[in-house]
Length: 585
Image (cartoon, rainbow, N blue to C red; front, side, top):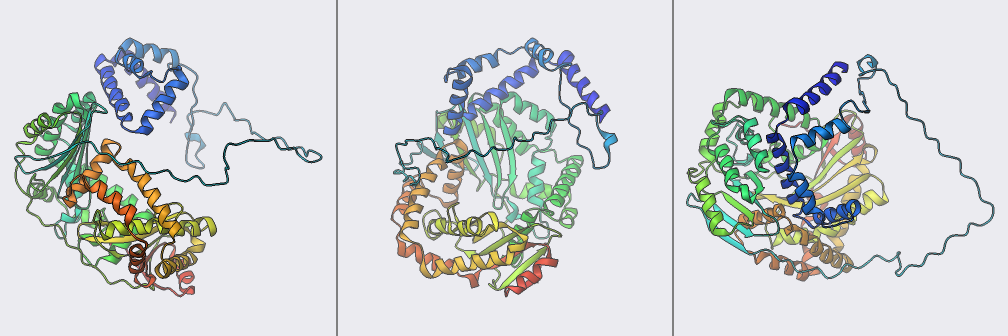
């Protein structure tokens, strides 16, 4: 470590003094400008910036001056700061070494922090006179939420590219940026039989070298543009996210086109990616949360892609060859059926023209079909137990099948119904298990859905000594709401809270894109915002309680527990549960 510490100092000094170029500085300038502009996309970002400038510069409108200073940076400025504050200056070096290996430290300690021992409090004789405080309001009374402000979306437009991509866009001039989300129907539910993990590996390979450039060269190009492009494999879609300053949109789209249309698919990249995914899969499979979620999928679905963990096993990875990735790419990474959501300060005609040029060479339609769910019957008295040795905190899942996702019908109304039960910090289950019993730091539940499947899931990390009691408490809470429903106060709390919360769902470009993706998925127009707001306000107590009666029946739930079977089996059986050992696929 001593040699490493010395070498780091030498490399940094050599780079700053001898190798730093104006091109490097310009790259930083562009990146920093993009970061500042993106920070202005939310109210929180704006307020934070105003407060910072007011605090440190006595001028909340200091942004223009800051940007001017950044854009004026030269190599000599960086060298001056390095010499003034870093080079050969006093510093703190902290060595963290394996226990029993003190010889590995950088050097012998020459400083020991002083132990702070608080002074003993002195008892004051007589009665303490409390200061008189006058308030303009009663702090013991919970403030009432005001009327939710109406949600306004920017003007939306719809289009379709010549190669078959459905486009939903919004013209937004708040910041000079363009943000887009491209969803290609090629997620993990499209994995061919016996090839779990192909979609994930394909996505990772799209982020590697192209036939024209190495990954580092592409990263350098994006950095110069202040742009970001990411690829991610979701359940139904491969999602590509792009964010850039609008002045650099054409150049950024050119890079996206190159990544999408000209992947190199080299053996060396594939070996590295496969090794990386393998190590990540090993790490995640040691996580109690991953084990719990994976076990739940295995219990709720009989077989197929719905029943599999989102990360492939070592055996599944070993069965995938580069030829499988190339085949999946050729069959499924195609534009027809893809969805593009975009928020930009560039007007629709120019934006569509730019998109058409960038993506015109991408052609075709996917050939594979998405897997259909095969629902398993659930037994409300069985606890499926996954072994994790000596786990002090246990992950639990309580779940059932439910209706698939919709935006205004039963799924949406079930979300409203659940808000006061397990969908908020003040919910019944969190107040009981966290505040009253102290079994957990937090517990929550939600209705979710993708593809043709829907489910309700309660999840939490529970103290190992209280797992059986926690499950019994959850069952009791389910029985109470099933039989008696919600109170008038809970329903009013739900209406106010959701209406206030949803206002932020459409604030930033990223938030808008997520909402546009839902609009794409359900083929609805912008009027859906008003319909949802109206539903929140008008759905009746009777209908909500009917949904509670339908979905919150303990006997129709399934229970998954991840922890040490040596102690949990007896604890659970002692409370009347039937325990079945489960091994993750």
